[in-house]
Length: 621
Image 1 (spheres, rainbow, N blue to C red):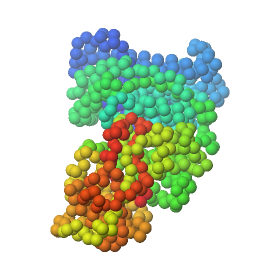
Image 2: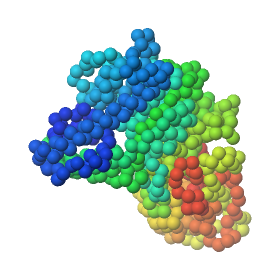
Image 3: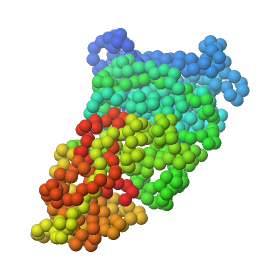
Image 4: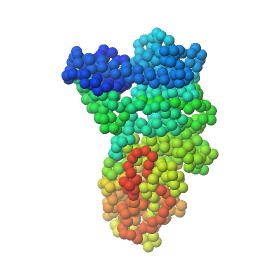
């Protein structure tokens, strides 16, 4: 995020709307309306700004925003009383020492809430990323407290004194929960309070419906995991939905004026109008909710990062070198920053790290993959680089770093409400059992090794030929759609030319051979392999489903390929590559295929045996 001198979209539209009908914009956040407020409105809202009913509706919305601000103030004063030994509100006076009660408002908007707090005697710092949101009079006179406005990105904001209260009034949505809490831990004084008034996604329903908002129970679980105590959670959904209903009514009356007022197109305004209606419907159906959270930081959190303290955060915040020590001690192999960047950079990463003094001591990694889920395009996260420093391991405990990083990653990135529907990986049996015991995984399949028995290892199928050739993107993009058509009842990762080029031509430190398989002169399949012991491991094969059995027979022929070859495939998909019951030699690799069970997503019974996964789907080969 970078600072700007204009309000970000869609706040600029909301500001223009309220200015049009009310002539003022004290808040850019939700309020709450009662049923009697709604019933008090009579007649439709005119599309003319001079409409008395429209102006009255706008004023009612502003009044409801002030009531919400008063509600926040009450919670803040209660928190202040607790820290000041239960002093009564009217007797509250800011101390003069350097540790007077200080408040940080994140995303202050027009600054009205900050002014209100300063007027009640708080030492207030209000920050916003947009210079346009900061009041024209940045240093107003206040009755007893102090007030400072700062244009700053919250993630870059620093303060050495620390704060007793941190407030996010409809601004928490702009940060990952991990980032929000990590930053709060550095800014809050020991035992400091967080107040978050926000709209959240809920975990109701059993259909993939990705949401840009974090899931409420995941946010609360993460807060507890990071040492925050939950003081209260107030459900504001019903009153906020009424506010949305009235705001949409006002918005609908201004559709023709807003393009000229905002510089946006009519289509952009109409799309926003429809999005507002969809948000209200999601709340009415229980897929979203509005809540006020009060959280208390752990006593050991201080005004600055404490040495030797472990913090959970997004792995994308650390440079690759920070993972070198934990990687090499976990896997006993050299760490290569280039390989790390190939996996996780470029928007592919979905990982959580536990770090101490800027060095990773635990990591639960994920790489985003485009997949087809029973013919539906979506995304999944492939779990990889699961590692904990040997002296920090406590695998069987939910207080251990393995569980904390794993649960936080799955909550953030995987499930019905997340950008990625599924999580999958390739743990060994021991690791699988640990994750099952902790409630993180359930088994959906296992990886099997396919080879040719001696009796079938003499010749190619009739008419088939195989050659080592350079990668041909056009051929790949012809074969992949034909293959995909045969998987309407399964789950398969995208294997188009773009993916294959990334996976096999760009991977640092490993070289793969591309194979072309033709039958009677017609290209039927493409495969990739790498050396494996005294032969080859076939990583991937792309072919129409009717050609897969003959293609597998061809690519595994030792007389043709120059050595014994094997192919790894999930057990549930073996039927796709068999000629008959005895033409292949099948053995167990000891590698399990789990699914995510921690965050709400498709049931194990739906996923069992449905994944087409090969050695090429693994990150470390």
